[in-house]
Length: 60
Image (cartoon, rainbow, N blue to C red):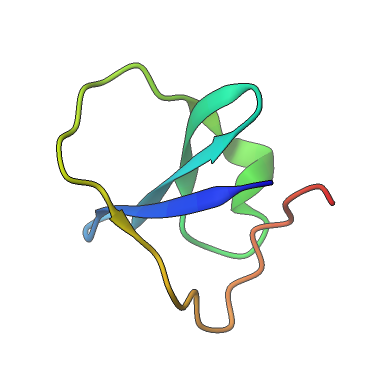
């Protein structure tokens, strides 16, 4: 299961939470392949409800 959160507008990045932790992912098609571990501290992350037509390429 993956939970996506809004993180930055410019450049657009999302944080993705899965069983292995938190990832910083570019908010564009195929962005999952360019993910990096997220090691920062953020309060009040907003879950994404609609990702539009972006396909990150998340594993099933």
